[in-house]
Image 1 (cartoon, helix red, strand yellow):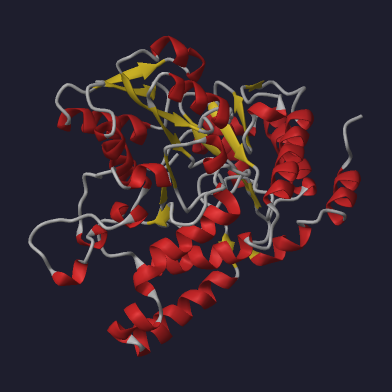
Image 2: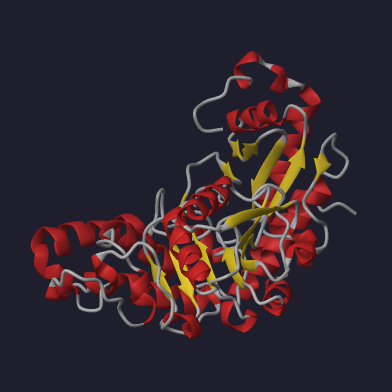
Length: 409
């Protein structure tokens, strides 16, 4: 029997994560199902930023590079992130730059670790930045060519002796399909290639075990499920076994072995620090640090259990609507979003937003709804599904104002 709203609310009251909703500042009257694009604002972030701006920057000035530990922020936050959410031992994760820049760095390093192998394998339907960066790198590495995979399911056919590096998304940003990281990485290694994973849609959505899965390199962003704020610094992972031999292409001064010797020649630092490039964005790192404080109050396993319950609930409540679910029903193959196909999906999403139910749309016809267990409740999911039912039944989405598209859709 389909759960009632009252039953959902009762289940929320017993939820071990329910108290964390108070850690976030969301507008009244809004049901926010777009945390897979931009996470909500943690309540402690403004105060923490004010402390850094007024105390560390305003009063400490340049002394804060030492006194406030700015210099070591990338590695310090990387270790916290790695320990709690990524399954990475210390010294393998740094928080820096953007996802695109970090992807350029790790792909460049990985290609150099597999000389004589010309193929860089990338999913045809990956998030576009992955395709663009792979294409750009191929132009800088003579002989290297990108090989587009129709799907991860067809990976084995392309894993031959020419495969150097495979770049895969842990979760498909369009459909929410989750890949088995450990099993796929094992297949990649069996072919002699290296595995690079894009974690943008899984970091903070489910437990990740990079070390246990034998991953070579990974990247991810800080502004989706991690709630680090718009344009938050990204992160990268470089397995310890590769660090001594890895040479990344953006050899800036923060990755130098002794940067304050101001040598004219480049010498890479020891360990994962060699993947740093320029001066860290201190304020962006501070905002992400405040968000990580909230994350450290949550058990990642409990987050995953609730995520699956929320997505199950939404799929159940929308099963009889005139939409096509494209997100896998099997829990082991599902991330923390639900994608529904509708020929007029953009207009339907805009009509929902007008009601205060914020999801998003991906061309040509996918309505995406992200489920963020730290601040989304079962009652919220019930209300969102009810709103979708009403929008479709009323036909209000056909209004001309919902057909107009902004710069961000």
